[in-house]
Amino acid sequence: MIRVYVELSGESLALASAEAVAAAEALGGGDASSGSAFESLRALEVPEERATPLLAARLALARRCLVERSVGCDPEKSSADAGNSGASAAFRRIGQPSAGADPSVHAVARRYVSAGGRIDLEHPSRRFWLARDRDGADHLLEEVATVDRSSEQRRRMPLLPFQRPVSLPPKLARAAANLGRVRPGDRVLDPFLGTGALLAEAGLLGGRLYGIDRDATMVRGAVENLSFFGLSAEELLVGDAGAVEFPGAPGAFDAILTDPPYGRSSSTGGESADRLVERVVPRWAERLRPGGRIVLVVPTGAAELPAPWRPTVSVPVRVHRSLTREFRVYERTT
Image 1 (cartoon, rainbow, N blue to C red):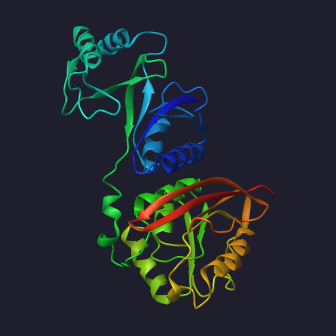
Image 2 (image 1 turned 135 degrees about the vertical axis):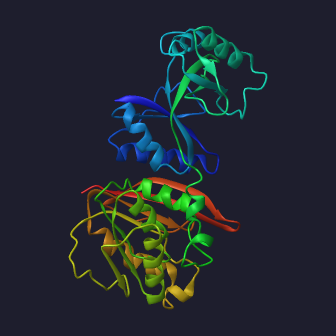
Image 3 (image 1 turned 60 degrees about the vertical axis):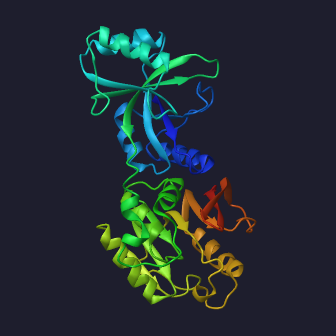
C-alpha cells in the first residue's frame, strides 16, 4: 500500500471526504487519515501508485491526487533531486491559485532549476505542490493524477435528451455511486429510477444497472439518458417498486442507490413519501449481499433503517437553492 493525498474541493467537505475514502476502498485501499500530517488534504491508501489515476477518474468532489516526495529530507533538497531529471515543472502551494510572492515556493523552484530542471507554468511535465503540516513545516508533494472536473459539466441535466427540473447534479450522483463503492461488474439497483442520474454514474464506474419506476415516461427517459452516455441497463421495470419483480432473477445486489421522490406527490401515486420509503427500501435491502451498501438521499430527519443495516455515513448537503438532503450510507452486517 502507498499513501496518497487528495485535495478536496469546497462544495461539501464532509461529503467529499466520505466519497474519497469510499472510492479508495473500492480500489482495494482505504482511509489513512490517522496520523496524517496535513489538515488541508485527505490521506488515503491505494495498492500502488498506478492506482491513483483510477482514483482520480472516480472522484467528483476533489481536485487532484498527490504523493509526498520529501519523506526524510527537506523540500529544497527533494526539489533538487527531482530536478536532476531535466524535466519541466511547475511549483505551487496547496490552496493558492499561483506561486505569487511565496518565498518557499520560489526557493524550491530555484533548487529545481539549479539541478538541471526547467520551469514551465503552462504545460509542465511535472507539477509539485508545497503543503504545510500541523507543525508548520513544509513538505513537497507531486501531483500524480488530476480530477477532470469538466466532465460532470458535460453530464448536466440541460445537456441530456430527457430532462426534468428536479434531478441530482452529476457530481452528487457520482459521489453517491462512490459511497456505494460501486466496482466493475457490481449489480446496482435504483428502485426510484427517475431520470436515471444515479444509475448513469454507477454505470460509468462499470456497474450492471437495474431500475424501477412507476412512471413509464420516466423509464423511457432514463433509457434515453443512459444511452446518451453509451450505457444500457440489464433490466428496467415499470411498476410499484414495492411489488414488482425482475424476471431475469439477477440474484443479490451489491449496492442500492436511490433518491426517493420526497415532496413530489405526482410520482408517489398518492402515497406519503415516508410510507413509500418504509415499504419499498427494506424490501430491496433484503436482496443486498452481506457487506453491500445502501445509499439513500433523503430529507434531514427521515427515519433510519433498522438492523441488520448499519449506518456508516450521514452527511447533510444542500442539493439545490432551497433543498437540503442527507446522504446516508448503510452497510449490511449479516
